[in-house]
Image 1 (cartoon, protein in one colour):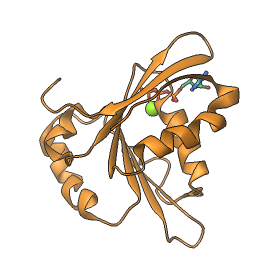
Image 2 (spheres, rainbow, N blue to C red; image 1 turned 90 degrees about the vertical axis):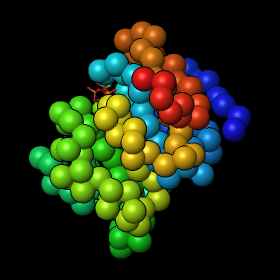
Image 3 (tube, rainbow, N blue to C red; image 1 turned 180 degrees about the horizontal axis):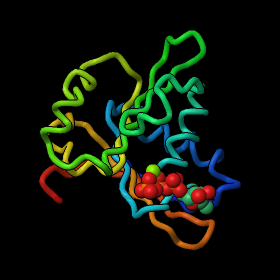
Image 4 (cartoon, helix red, strand yellow; image 1 turned 60 degrees about the horizontal axis):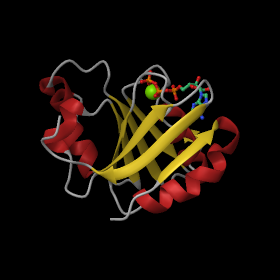
Length: 148
Ligand SMILES: Nc1ncnc2c1ncn2[C@@H]1O[C@H](COP(=O)(O)OP(=O)(O)OP(=O)(O)O)[C@@H](O)[C@H]1O
Ligand SMILES: [Mg+2]
């Protein structure tokens, strides 16, 4: 896979999203890495908008698994934030395996460390770095199993 590195501010996030999507579109699972406030959730929201999945299906209070759908429900995107998951049993209990096997365009995962045993081959990672108050550096790379 080729890779990209881009720098962007909030104003140009919608310019960057098509380039990022082009890089990740063949992957079922996309892992997002970067410190708190790096812009992981902001990027996922921008990609979801780009894909036309603007219906938030899941309850906003159930913040571990968020599901977005297109109007009419044909297309589904999952966004998982595993920050509050304590161990792999919690992941199993919340139905991670069934979720991965279900029908969706793409699954984004923030704080994915505990999910590594479930990640399929071909998973990619988006690495985000805060370079200033409003600027971010982004790279897309293959997910390296066993690295963390
Ligand atoms: N270029 C940018 N891209 C993304 N976010 C930006 C940018 N510039 C400023 N921000 C701000 O930085 C914050 C990023 O928050 P966000 O929730 O996306 O981070 P996160 O990586 O998901 O953090 P967490 O690990 O806590 O979930 C937002 O308040 C956003 O407005
Ligand atoms: Mg987040």
